[in-house]
Length: 161
Length: 325
Image 1 (spheres, each protein chain N blue to C red):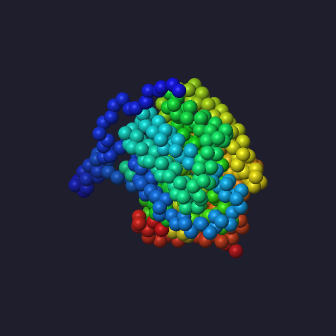
Image 2 (image 1 turned 90 degrees about the horizontal axis):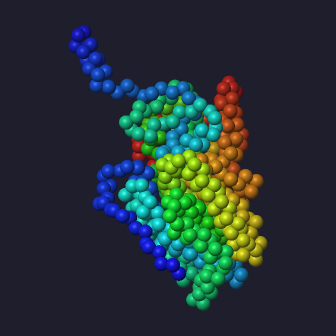
Image 3 (image 1 turned 180 degrees about the vertical axis):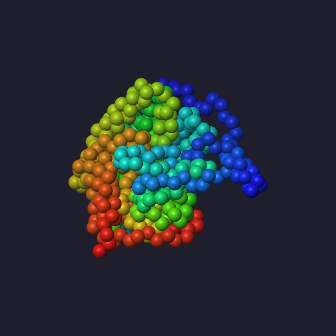
């Protein structure tokens, strides 16, 4: 008993890994330091949680079904399109089990790699790629996503036919 | 001609890529290196037959458009990207600008590859002469060059981003148009490589602009914002005239202008500002958009479809490398 108590105390003193940080947010997103996706999400006016940028930060763990918003890193042939922070987040089976859809950002200048991150995640997680927008999105994108998400969640709450 | 003192860095230290202040520098450097290409890799000669299906008027238009683009790439390669080096916030940012400058020179040279493959020496000379004589093309070069020579780092970045993300598009429209009609498709492939590069350049310079804005007063920020919109309007007015100079003969000017609006919005977004042109004037011809990016059309918008294909997520094990498709 004594030994265990000391062990726990030591772990606290050393600031041991507190594990993933839970979030009940229905909207989870990633945005790099350039902040385009962060700006887009801000314009939606919905409660949202940002996937941490640095690997030393506590990772996120979803506790409720959510939609993911991700930027595409411009590559070729899909390689490197999904930001590594998002891969890390989705490598957690809890998070993969609760994702219900993905919205992606990109730039049509990247040709068939436009919004490839959304395509890859949709296939990998078996969820619909709900919407694509460019850079930080126009006001029209904001309207369509706000309305679209509202309808999407309503539809999901209906009992299966 | 006034003699100007060349602005160079006052002090240079050996660059240490093992100590990074801004991860974006490394990310963009890697992206640019991975995207590296040369015109010799594109089989332009496969377009010779297609070139001869164009009318003389269409051929002349195409050559003029490409000399205009050559001028912009030359400016950006020899003056624009280089002028940003003394203002860099990190040594790695300086290195990225040297990469951008070199790639712009590759772009400029690639138009000459297209010309030498498709046209006669006389036609090429005529087109270059046109580029020197066209007032609106020269005015656009002058406006941008003035800011590159000025002493305001933030304004230089604005001018540079507007060049990378807006001024090229009156020209880029045409190869996309030909491509949508199954003409000059190899040339279009080469232009798509340029378009991809310009997106990274515009994104990066726009990002560094926003980092620079964080360091100045609120008053200065407002001044720079006003300046950005004024410069965009000035360049836009000129682009509209330039567009008419080029495209009126083939009746495409109105279509090109929508493409200009659409790209002006993206240039503003690269600088961190909201889009300015409303969606009613940015409805780019779907054929052009799809020549640019095959999955940019409305059919890919789940929200406006029935959405009946929805399936519940099934968790599969994933490794990092699984995410590279």
